[in-house]
Image 1: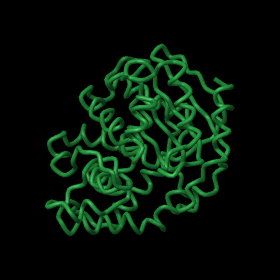
Image 2: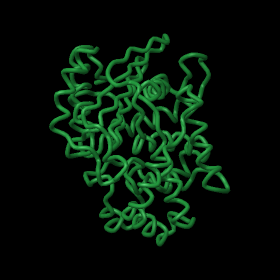
Image 3: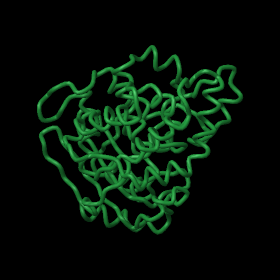
Length: 301
C-alpha cells in the first residue's frame, strides 16, 4: 500500500489546493493518505494518516442519510430531485431555467442546502449536534467535531451559497432565515476527521447501514442504498461518469481533498489529498483509486 501511495503522490504536483476558501488554502498540497476498512475489523492504511481534514461536500451524503431517516424519502424528494447535472456543483443556472425551483440532486450545493435546512432542531447548535453525533456513531470516534477556523473562513466567503439560499427562499423551497442556515451549513462542511474515520463511515455505507463491529443497523438499508446511488451518479462532481467507468465504486469527494468510497459488501475507503484537479477532486486521490481498482478489481460494474 505504501508503494501505491508514493506512486500516486507524484500527481500532487499537477493539482492545486482550494484557496478560494482561505483556510483550505493553507493545506500542504503534497499530503496524501488512504485507509481501507474491512468488515472483519482489519484496517490497512498508508501515507499521512494522522492529518485531519474537513469533510466539505462529503458531508452532503451523511446529512442526506440523517434527513432521510428523520423525514422520510417522500418529503426529501418532494424538495430535491434525483437527477445528475452537468453544471458545476455551485451553479444556480438550473434553478433559474426549470419551471419549479427544485435542485436537481442533493449533491450539488443548492440541493445540499435544502437537505441541511431539513435537519431537525430548534437552533443551529442543536441541529449541528444531531449531525455530529450521527457522524461520531458512524465513525466510532467520539472526538469528531468541526474546525472553527475553517467554518469561520467558509462563512465569511459563502456569498454564492447565500445567493442560492435567497433564490430557494424566494420560491418557498427554504422557509428559514438565510444566515442561520449558512451558519449551520458551513459548520457542517467544516466537520473534520482523518482518513481512518472516513474509511469507517464508508464501510457502514458499504455494509448497507450496519455497524461493522456490532452488526447494529445504524441506518436503514434503503437509506444506505439511496446514498450510494447518489455517490455513483453525482458524487464526484462533473467527473462522476468518468469515475464510474475508470474506478466503478460509490464515492463522494470534497474540496478539502477527501474522498469517501464504499465498495458494496467489501470495503470502506477514506482518502485525503488536498491538491485538486480542475473538477475539484483530489488529483492524487483519484490516481490512487485508479491504481487500487486495477490491482484489486474494486469496480462494482
